[in-house]
Image (cartoon, rainbow, N blue to C red; front, top):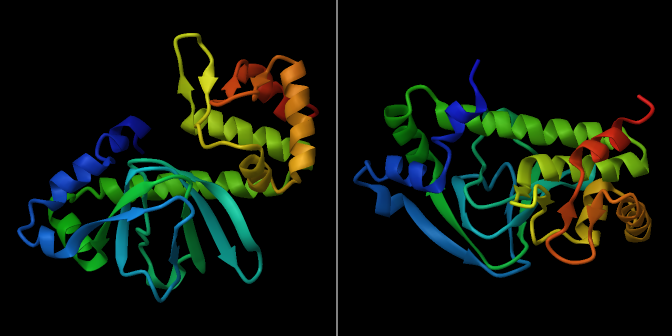
Length: 231
């Protein structure tokens, strides 16, 4: 068993590039791609020949299958990686990441990535980190799916606060600048109007300030209490 900090120290664009550049074939198999706001990278079982690292920008992440349809499960930020599967037979049916603003990613040939990792990362820190992150994201998405409408919104806010917010000098949490009523509603699987109503209640209770960006979570403990109320 590992502490999260043990794995995350190896899990950044700079660290992974440092590892990959040890292979003299780096420039042949690794390149950068710029994306405009709204552009997407769509991965299917037949188009997964590359490993991706986010160098700049934010992305919304959608999981899609014939059974569930298209679902927003979480968001990616710089230093996140995606498409790092272990088993060819068990890949997500479709994964789509959509740029929320101008972005830049590194695209690395998957066979090159794996051959280098086998030599330079014998303890599999990269794969373990990826698996731990994916497990958390999909686990939260599953929990959220089982809740009622209000608690789905509260759960999404807690998840965003705990995993993506900045704890600033005023001792409050700043949510990412890309967060909007529409994205939160999509993540929670509710309407924009209903989401607005719940956020207004949170503002009245002095839990959240969503009047301007970045949104501020003023009382994470109370937000958690509201989420677990009645359990």
